Image (cartoon, rainbow, N blue to C red; front, side, top):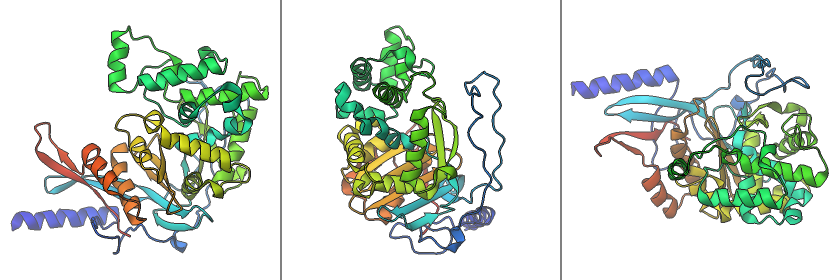
Amino acid sequence: MEQERLMRKRQAQAVAHNGAVLTRRENGFAGAGPSLSAGTDETAAVKRAVSGPPAAGADARAGSGAAVPAITAAVPPRDEPLVFVTRGSLIENIHRGRICAVSADDGKVLAAVGDPEAPAFLRSTAKPVQALGALLAGAAEAFGLDSRHVALMCASHRGTAAQMEALEEMLRRAGLDEGQLAMHPDSPLDEEAKIAWIREGGKKRRLYHQCAGKHLGMLAWCRLRGWPPEGYTRPGHPAQTETLARVAAWAGVPPEAVVSAVDGCGLPTFAVPLRGIALAYGRLACPEAAPEGEAEAARRAAEAMNRHPGLVEGPGRLASVLLEDPNLVAKSGAQGVFAVGLRRQRVGAAIVVSDGAESALPAAVRAVLVRFGAWTRELEERFVRLFPDVIASAAGEPAGRRMTAFEG
């Protein structure tokens, strides 16, 4: 009894400290505390002064000595506990963040945890939208690119044999040179691919970078449009000015509201309100709701992702697992960003984990899919196998559990 009393006391202290009721609801989301609930006036936008892209001509490459813009956001985004991790009888970790789900048709916020108006960088969730420029320009037809290559334009690949084979084909068919890729040479991320790579001598290549497919798509687009490949990653390059305008349109915000920064691969990355990321994925899932003239290209990109889920990320990756379900289109981004579109439900959802922990995403994604009636027996079986709630020790003993920390 004393142990139970202490456990309740510590849990109450954790709740008070984090301003949240950390209670898992297995059947529904009704209750008090942080909730995956309909948006209200409480989630109205807070005006923020945010920094823009680097000055024209500034060298953003690592080691160049270029200044990093100062943080000028007035306040950090209002986040809430999303997932907590137990060990024994105690809460060991709390992953905070934000969730927003919107209608694919009108962008109305249907449910939210935390502030849906605060900005979040799309990171690699932007890739399907970034691929549209090449598709709209006819690069696939001009260079004989099939659905595998389109999937890789939208991908964060892991360097598997199938991914590398398709990337090599893209390089040849588009008449590109690997040295044109802006990023530094890299090694495979997939464990089996890395073992094979080491056995073969371990030579790094630009094609091994997880964003190589996106870059090849952009270079093919530049070649088709007659734009210079030099500087294709710079904010002022025609490919990037057009891409920024496209991201803004898909997110339902004016271009001047988009915040630009440098992504890990060297291309610009864009921040929009979290609801804008959700809207973009609702439109990818339901391309008839896409911005004017872009429905067919969006359908082509999303269908390629579903046709080749293993190419989009890789074995055991959350997005690839979800893409096996024809009802869903999904993609992860660095630093805990994830987006998913639900076709039958005509809903888009976006999640950002404030501490960037990917381990928190499966539980949060599951809660969203359950909330909107998109959870299936097949998904349950895959999640039990790949993303179990129970945390086991190396000896196979149950040690703790991951649980959603919000209600709705």
